Amino acid sequence: GARMSSAKNRNGGRSNAASKRKPNATGRSETVARFVKLEYWVLNSAAYKSLAAGPRALLTHMAQFHNGGNNGEISYSARQGGSELHASKNTAAKWLTLLEDRGFIVRTSEASFDFKTGAGAGIARQWRLTMYEGKNGAPASKEFLTWQPVEKSKRGHARETGCPSPMTAAA
Image (cartoon, rainbow, N blue to C red; front, top):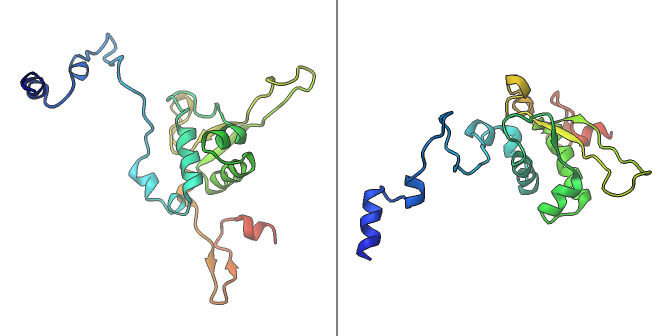
C-alpha cells in the first residue's frame, strides 16, 4: 500500500514504465503505442453522422492500417473487414461502397487474383483515406465534407440534392 502510493505521487499517477520513456536521437519515443486519430471535424461532419455503427467501425478498422506514409496504398478487402467486424463479406462490401460514396475512402487500385497460382495469390484493393494527408505530404482531400443527405419531399420521395446516392442512381 504505502510503497504503491509513493510511486504514484512521484510519477503523477503514471506507472514507472511510462515515466522512464526517453526520446531517441530523432526526438521520438520508441515505446509509444500506435493509435487511430479521428478528429472532431470528422466526427461532426454530416457524412459521418449519417453512418450506422457498422460503416463507422469499418472506417476505424481501415484507419488502423494507416501508418502516416502509406495513404493510397492501404490494402483492404471486404473479406478482411467482414472477418474483423463479425459480419458477412457481402455486408462489409456494402459498407465499403457506402464509405466510398460518402467520400471517406477512395479506391486507388483494383483487386486481382491469379487463377494459375491459386489461393493466396490475390491482391486486395488499395485505398486512400481522405481524412489523412496523402503520400509525399499531399493535403487531405476530405471529400466527405461536401456530402449532403438526400432530402425527402412531403410525400416521402427522395429528392436529389446534387449528390448521387444508391437510391437515386438505380432509378
